Amino acid sequence: MVFRYYFFKEQDRNYDLADLIAFFQAVPNISLEKVGSERRMNYVNEMLDFKATFVISDKSILKSANLVSIDPKYLDLNIYVEFNLLLANYKIELVVDIIENLCKRFKFCVYNEVFEDVLPFRRMLLLKAFEKVKEAYKSKYEDEIAEYNKLEPMVLNSVYKYLENKSSLKNIFKEDKIVPLDYIFYKKLGSRRAYVGVKWDGYTPFIIPSNVDLLVIYENGNNRFIHYKEFEAKIIKVLKPVESDLFGLCYITYKDMKKVRKELVKGKFSAINQNVELIQIDLKQILDI
Image 1 (cartoon, rainbow, N blue to C red):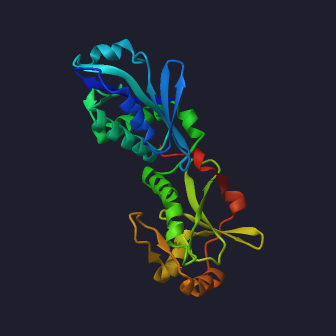
Image 2: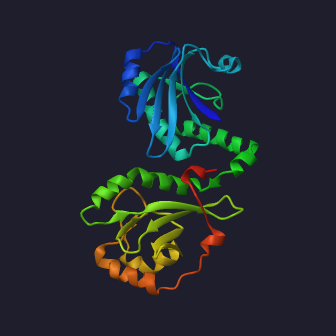
Image 3: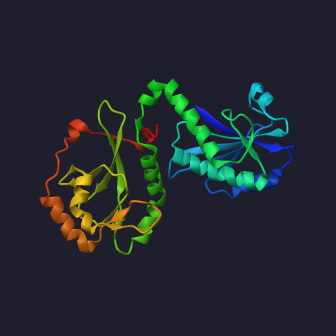
């Protein structure tokens, strides 16, 4: 299902089209195309694997009933942005960032069918409208949602934020040869709950994100699974916090690897039979609802 925000202006429909096009051209990850009479500005975030499309149309696509209920001082610009309703809230925050700048620059207002009327840009109201429609969709189409796995919004947000910042972390710690670990995700048969894992070779000093359930170590041609919290408890004294706005990130240095290896080899951990309990899944299969 597609979700949309529509753009209006108060009292008039005037805006500089060339200036509007220039605005979108300046936004990273946006490409422009002409489809029939429509101008489409496609925002494609390859890092987080999602898209949103801003559309300038020659006519309104809002239903007549919606237009009638809107205060006549607000005029439809036939401009809207659309994206998949099942996107994670974190991704929508990035789209709303663009909307905020758009509204400030051109004095646009925003409408969605959930609103009673057109409103000046209010970030929280836009996000709440999206969440409300998404939750309603979940309730109506339970079978479809059951095909996906779930992480709590806060956890999935931290996953996406880590992915967005992973390359910069790699550069920051490059000289120390400390690497940010890669994610790997799992589920249990018969459950929607997803588990966050990280892959590690067992030897390289690492940066580990927050909200990790499983440490997956590739050794002797096989994966060894460890509950991360059990491992963390044994090495907590040598874990160092990463100084950044990415809450909960920690790292291990070469200096402390001897202690870490000792705990890894000699420490006792709860058994995990991954062949029975865990099924690997893709991040695309995970929702925050």
